[in-house]
Amino acid sequence: CGKTTLLNLMLRLYEPQKGKISIAAQDIRQIKLDSLRSQIGIALQEPFLWNDSIANNIRYAKTDANLEEIKHAATIAQIEEFIASLPQGYDSIVGEMASKISEGQKQRLAIARAVVKNPAILIFDEAMASLDSQTEEKIIQGLKEEFKSSIVIVVSHRLSTVRNMDEVY
Image (cartoon, rainbow, N blue to C red; front, side, top):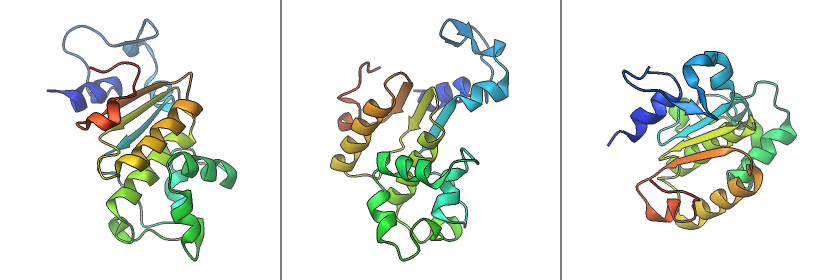
């Protein structure tokens, strides 16, 4: 029914044909594109990861992120324990098309990438679809604690994902 299209409009990948999209009462067409996108963190159901280290895949959203920031983001995304279990830890290579990790681990890396930049707006488009409900709940709780003053938009078909949100559409 247009959920992803609406998110694409918010990111200004498309321009609305009618009406406007406002954030804090400001038409987003009046915001410089780079400025708008710098304030948004996004995680998708099928994230794109490079054949590079876990740290660099998380750091992609904030190129100057230090290891402490990366670890903090990984903790929020509930992937820190998995990374710590790897022989090379954050230096582990995820493989071509991230073939060395599971779908849920890919999604959690994408979530870490989205939160590492500490954005004003976080968008999760089916970003937890491959996670079990317990992990999903821990991530949502971490997001609520860490991003109290941010706008967090979660698109999901699973009731368990949205049941504790402030508003549900």
